[in-house]
Image (tube, rainbow, N blue to C red; front, top):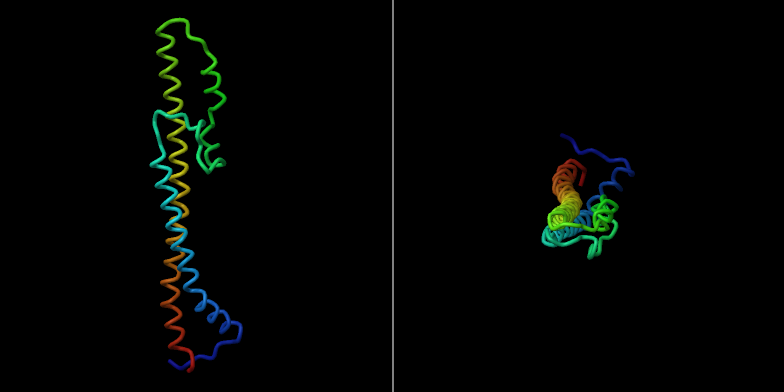
Length: 143
């Protein structure tokens, strides 16, 4: 194959891509680590007996997603049991609702953390493949 002269716009594009490789790889690594840390934090923070409304964590907008049935839970908390059986059933229902809200919150955090980590891995994969393509183009371009 003969060397190919690139138009100035394409030469600038290739030059810019070659210059930004390290920054893109660093950003991808940072995203992957932040996503993995967030997902891990979400899983470790899960407590099946706790009420996630009491201490939602630093990610309040995400935590609000777990409170889908907060209005129902408030209604259950206002009921006054009259017998021991009603009290036991009410306590079990409240525990189940807290567990469900905590589980939803953990799964949302796990999902979001996984998405961010995956985006970082995709960025790093793009850097690796782009490096290979830039090397091939560099061999084809005139010296």
